[in-house]
Amino acid sequence: MEDLFYIKENLAKIKSKISEDVCLVAVSKTHPVSFIQFAYETGQIDFGENKVQELCDKAEQLPKDIKWHLIGHLQSNKVKYIAPFVYLIHSVDSEKLLKEINKEAEKNNRNIDCLIQVHIAEEDTKFGFDINEAKYFIENTDFETDYKNVKIRGLMGMATFTEDKNQIKREFYTLKKLFDQIENSQKFDDSFDTLSMGMSGDFDIAIDCGSNMIRVGSTIFGNRNYH
Ligand SMILES: *Cc1c(COP(=O)(O)O)cnc(C)c1O
Image (tube, rainbow, N blue to C red; front, top):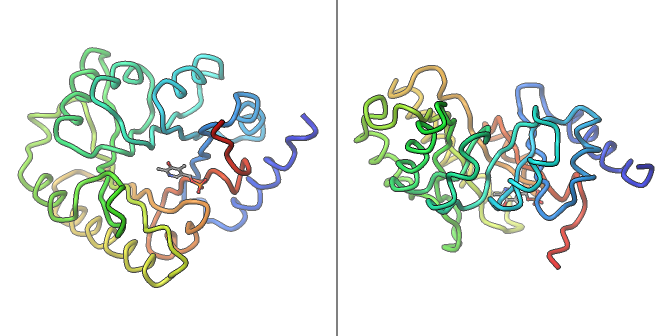
């Protein structure tokens, strides 16, 4: 355990930089269960994974009060595996997926909290609704009737991977503006309260732009080894 001490230090360092109103999701993808267990024992409760299989394998081996966040692209046919226990799905990027989440949530007799993923980056490899698509979808959907078992808690977005801080800022502000518009429209009740943006390289900018949930991996656990 001694050699995992850096995880505790990294968590403390990040926590000291952010206000208590910002939720820190520790992104543990590719890292072993022992790293998560260690972070959990220092008091970290929110963990994020981007693959369903990996998330399920880890959840099975770890304490049941961990809040599991699914942050990566989710295929509709895999929703059933996480539906019984997932805490928050950040990556709702289609109507079809949301329907499936609602269906599986109902089967499990629960509500599943979700964020709508919005595509704000220049790169076209990233998933999500475009700003206008997201607006249209939200405005024209009767969530209370059609999605009784999901709760839309907010939005998630990723900025372009670039050194250009102004560009990152612009992209995050675009998402914050949409977030405010939806919040002010009273489409959802007060539970529309979560703006998930910011990763290791840009969480400080994201928070300046209004983020209240950051997803941080490498700054906590170190570099990922995909082999
Ligand atoms: C991997 C990942 C992160 C964390 O990235 P780091 O740069 O390691 O902090 C955040 N969000 C999503 C969606 C990810 O896939």
